[in-house]
Image 1 (cartoon, rainbow, N blue to C red):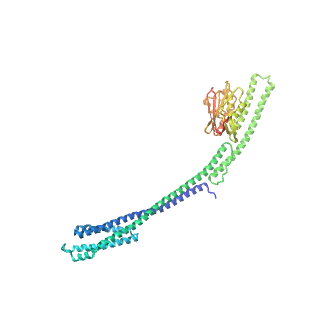
Image 2 (cartoon, rainbow, N blue to C red):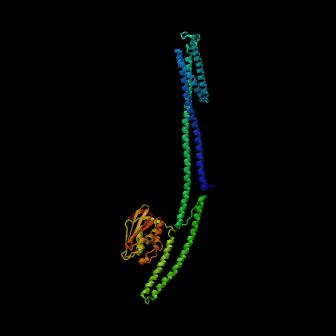
Image 3 (cartoon, rainbow, N blue to C red):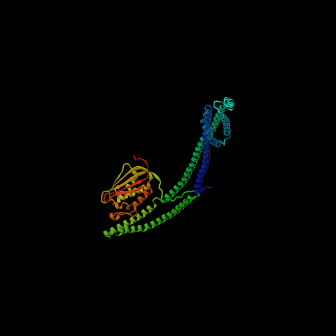
Length: 489
């Protein structure tokens, strides 16, 4: 089952949303791991810091204890007892920090047990020292303790054991801390990689989806635009659209319109042909009647009557030309012409030979190209422009100059004459249907030739303009898109 266009768009956005949610979930999990490891490292730093404080306090207590025994100066006992009080709060904090590590709790308990033993030993000696009545006479109790404990370095052994336990405690914490730091680095690296990968996948899905949808839409719209353009040029074709979605309705409508227009224009062509044929019959009859009158009663007719008959025949010929011109104008762009190699020099020589009188001088540029284009169309353009120059030559010796130059996307041709010229106020009007300077210059004209020229040129994506003034001739400059084949030798 084929998805409609809206279904494809929804599916694409759904994929992007799914990958975005996956990315969010993975990042949330990885962030949680990173935060957990970071918190543990922060806690581990506090454990190491507290361990150092406790150890330092114990050492200071031992130092003050020894100082008192050696000097019997009671000032050493003040920091001794202060350290005992301060250490109590740090010990409680340490126990909370290591509560989730049974091994560290065990090591810390061993340290505290040894420290408590040392405190019992130290406090006993201090009390025995206090009980001496005469400082110079050693009491029996102190002597016993001195001999059994102090002389045998009982306190030093406990101090060394406590220091060893602290080193073990710190080493264990540093090992775990190192492992956690490595895990944190690994988690951060994984988070970066996974985030980057999911971002690339999400962006890729979004870009590919957008490219795919845009591609199919633009491709189909281009085919519709091409069909509409062909319809505007009279080529009534149809496009094949196998999709069954929203754009298919537009394709179907264009195809229906093309078919109806094709049928309508076919009927119109037939009608125009019949009408033109029916109009030409009485016109030809009028022309023949005037001709017969001249043949049969030529000697009896006055010069003025001959003049009227000539004018009548001229009007009939003009009317027939007008009918032919309208038919030709209506068919422009509705029939495609084959593209072929056209030697512009040869083409213009043929046109000049067929429509330019002998009293005219025609100058053709030496650099006229050989181009790949529609021969009939460009022939119609030059025939009408040259014919226009012949009609409006005035009282001067006729001169027509045709030049060309290559431009970015084709060629620019110029047809220049030395005729009566065109006043600037008429420059835009002369390209309209039935616009002619006949009344002013007394030249028989249908006023449709330049309209045909303009329509042919614009139908081929070109442009035309006129440069002229009254009494100084006219230059018709037009751009004709074409491909250069070879330069003429």
